[in-house]
Length: 605
Image (cartoon, rainbow, N blue to C red; front, side, top):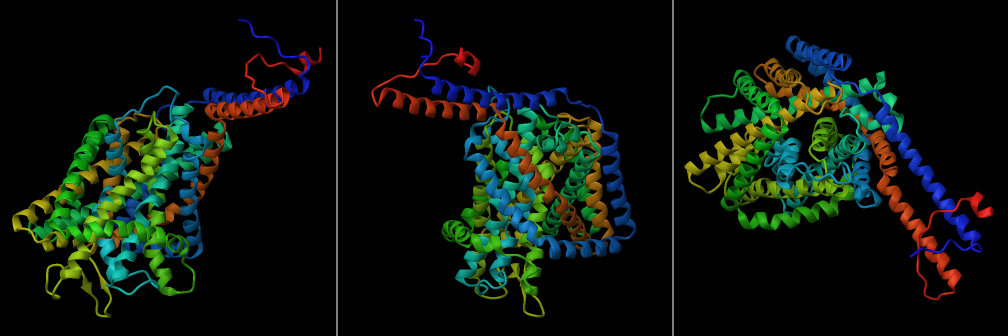
């Protein structure tokens, strides 16, 4: 049945529809030009000698400096950190909230249905493997290191100006503050980089260089320019030092576990260096085997072991207290969020300034320094998922796991401490009191002290301690090999499967940075590690600006996606066609039909 042509007496309607068609045609042509630039841009392969050489030179220079003059390195890092906190602490605080709002808006508006790949792509990995790899790369060692330490510390020493220590209110504040540092905020930062990497690579066909994510803002030529190379070098350097810090934390905790169990008399620098050397060899072997084999396999095993550890501690510890503290933690996080998100350094109160530098601003800078590697790695394993699925998975799943983890370990430790009958009890030994009366915890050993305080047989405590050491070791391996692959990719023009020698080089460099800094610390390896942390925070400052620009670039790219254009056109055409039909037929029943658009010239004939 042939449809009748458009009526000649609907000139105004024809012009309106033609205007919509012309407007949409302009949008489509714009998108075609963007993708054409991507296709016709210079695609480079192999090692980028400038990027690799500059990043390697920075790594070697820091290694030599740390070995020759660790005190000088620490002093410079401390001075630089003080300047960053004083002058730019506000930037970290504001940017962190901007990142959370941005990813939520992107996920739950018109951009949410856009696939991270072609329209018919399916997820590359199962949901279980995807979550396991994402979680192991993003927070594995951190949760083991701070799982008991942070909530317990905030309980005995709450943030300045909040509540009285070791009270019921202190329990809520401790858990709420911990959730603030470990749930939505860090994963929103990772999600921005992950979205930029996955969308640009699998949807637009860009290379997996960090600078490629800015093509939508500065153009494809900028990716290969000197500015693009500087961005890639900064991404590698931030990844290197961020990973080395996490490896140092892991080595300290493994050493603390071996010392606590009596396996070694003291976890000195030589022991810690040996631990790093052994695990470095392990994660290099895992990295060269690729994501599909080494990292995926280890991540799945680690997730199962982590679940087993959490379940055992849940039932062995103060179970009822832990169950009660879970909704308490969520409620405290929600109610205290405005105050926590608006708290800044530089207020004139020395105690608040110092606390912010040691905790919130430190964490925001720490997460930013991890974004190049964690975000890029998450993007690499997220092909085929939609933007909404990606953001929901990246934000909610790790956040829920973090709430449960900190409730079981940190909440369990608080519960045992509240039940302690005297200062000599095993639970009380988790907290030390200084000469001035201030209380603190030893992050290296408090996890194992907590396990000792559980009301379980000695043999079961030994099993749990051994399981924790294995977990830290595997988290060490999965995090470091993910970082090695990403650094190799950045230095090899975004290669999806970089050369093995390149992966081995950056893996060895990561282990060497962690080992040399610990070795340079002599009898006080924690001091050297703190110096490395300070350097990492300082290097994170330019990345705050970079990530804010990335938000703008990503928004521009998503706004020109064909799916967004089609949906926008469908809404406009349908709304205006219905309005025109109602007016033309005076409210009577009518139907909509499609016909080829009539141009202004044809309508005038």
